[in-house]
Length: 295
Length: 128
Image (cartoon, rainbow over all chains, first blue to last red; front, side):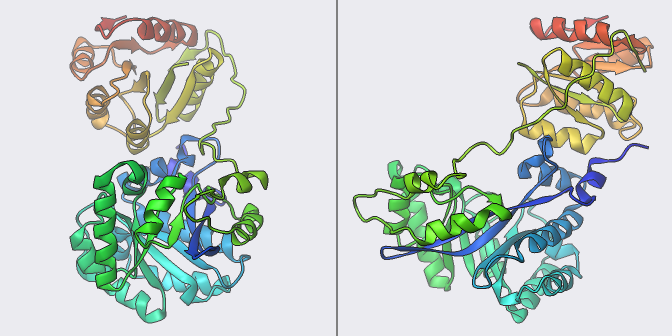
């Protein structure tokens, strides 16, 4: 019996944690407020991509199992980061709806790694419109009671819709990069962003703009009043071990005004920060087995 | 170079096929089960898929997977390898979108030739 991909993912070292800073831009200053933990599968395989990894997990109806392993990997990885940084982890809504013990698992894992619960934000992601609403909402209430914040991921796309906003009452809206990127050239995207910002204000939620890569798009979201920024313009996702100098560099950067000389060049000059594709498959040397019979 | 997907629940066989195709210069991914194959097909555009349809993991769903592959947006060329050789089996594979039906046992060299030929041809149905 061969080992399934799920077994490989759940084996020690099967999942790896990358982290990406979420930067608070205030006046002329930048400060890393938190990091989002992002899961990667086995290096050198197509499952290194989180898209493929979690697509597979959902097809196996194993979101809860993989989410638990991802959270455990993430919290073990970020325990060395400064205690003033928030920590975001992604969790499927279906996990919160099906796994009645998930919140207990999360809090116990955080305790094991010395991470205080008020630092945690659970980013709710969902790719299926059907979940156990009662259990899901119970999990959210329990997390809030413990001081864990709730963010709604991918707002503006997929299942992160108005119903989810009403039900989840998120502390934070994370606006999907689809709406953010090219906003500087697309009035429709700007209109939608403005609408979401207004909705978040009315509901008392904070807003993070995800996927900010271009200076012009940064200018748009700042002008709309979004002050929490995540994207390649500050840092691509990195192994946590490489994050500290990047955080120090971002914290030292001024935010330019209308001139918009953005931090991109300076970050590049700091080294080890050139955006590049995540998927770089390293293949072992192929073994030629001429005329070997198959089957 | 074309990107290929090899689907088989026999790890030794799958690895041998994948490594031989790698040695020919193709980029090759592997899947051992239906969900793994579907997740890869959803996210990557393959030029050609080689699959066994008598997979223990897949069972009767093997033919459904063929339909999924042949109906995907990228519509890769599709080579079916099977130890079953009956005309009904071949015909069902053809109806499910297989471009080539390759009966086991066969050699890696033969498979390599079939892959090369299949990639060079437009989507005609072919039986070897």
